[in-house]
Image 1 (cartoon, rainbow, N blue to C red):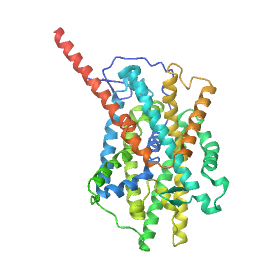
Image 2: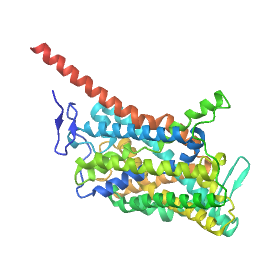
Image 3: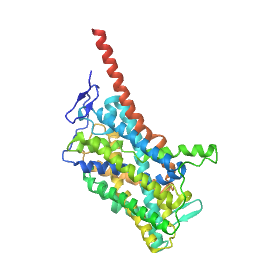
Image 4: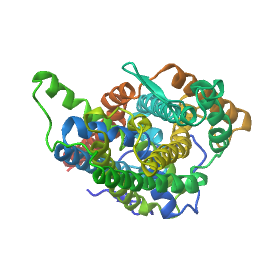
Amino acid sequence: MKLESDDSGVEASLLPQIQSSRDERRYPGASFSGAIFNISTGMVGAGIMSIPATFNVLGVIPSFLVILAVAYLVEVTVEFMLKHTHYGNSTTYGELMAESFGRFGSVSLQLCVMITNIGALIIYLIIIGDVLSGNESGGTVHLGILQQWFGIQWWNSRPFALLVVVLFFLLPLLLLRRIDSLRHASTVSVLLAAFFVVICAAMVVNAMLEGETTRIRLVPDLTDGTASVFKLFTTVPVIATAFGCHVNIHPVRAELDRPSEMISAVRISLVLCVVIYVLVGIFGYLLFGDSIMADMLVNFDRTWDSLFATVLDDMVRISYAVHLMLVFPVMNYSLRINVDELFFPKKPLRASGWFRFYALTSVLLGFVYSAAIAVPNVWYFFQFMGTTTVMCIMFIFPASIVLRSILIVKYRYSMHDETL
């Protein structure tokens, strides 16, 4: 018994066909390059800033191997998801879970997506706030760009600076109703991440010329015994979180002009992200060594001896803050869809009036803003999400879909043998 193939070239699992209650289906016309940038943007978010901290803990060689391993597992699980998308009827991850496990499966996925994406969006705003208004860690005050340029003023405090960003930069992008409409913002976002890598490379070269680079470790330092070994395991959730793209796979595929190209877009995105993560990890580790923070951007408030390094320092922070502002709408898109599916399963968001769309967008944005003001550190979010909801979304749920499909195939084989 073979798996059936749909018109998109992706094999469908032998599951009973369930018609989705969501009316909205594929929107033709989305480009292959747009899919690559939208998927890449979903991955290269805040996680890139914590990659150097994982290099500090694991060492260069283990960090590189873990990044490759996670990227491979992501590619495998995404391919599983696409092969088990039944006849192309699933336009969201939640609908795919509903086809396999009914309402329980979709609700479980939607709750995990809500926790993960809300946490990611909070992290984005925390980092943007760190860049603009600084942060305090371990009794050390790190000044933001606005405070370095204009001194400490009421209008460059974290609450006010983030409020301006939310209202005048993020909200207009959040009001776009199709994810393909964000393709240009995603392109700029990925280019800014690449620009960030180039600037970091220039800063490393400048630091080498001035003899200011630190010595890096190729393997982890285990001199502290059990404490050091335990600390190694805290890095895997951080790296796993940096590759999360599963919730955006179906919305991007649904709008792709040729859905059969989706897996190729994912593979290209993964290669791009691996290169960026490895380079940023090595460069950041060379620049800051053991003093690297969980959010590397905080380290860029240091005083450099040359004007060139100071200018590069500011360019790094500004470019990455803008990058996160452009990543934010992509993550919010999948969050909004899953929240809507959870509370309004029979009323598609795109088919609804503008009031519900605006209300849902405003409530989510208001909650994320409030949490970003209240919570100061991103490392705890990465560890919590990476060990719980991210693992479910990236690995456990796709594996459960495959296992259920295998059990159904075996059951049909056994029933067929009994009738002979």
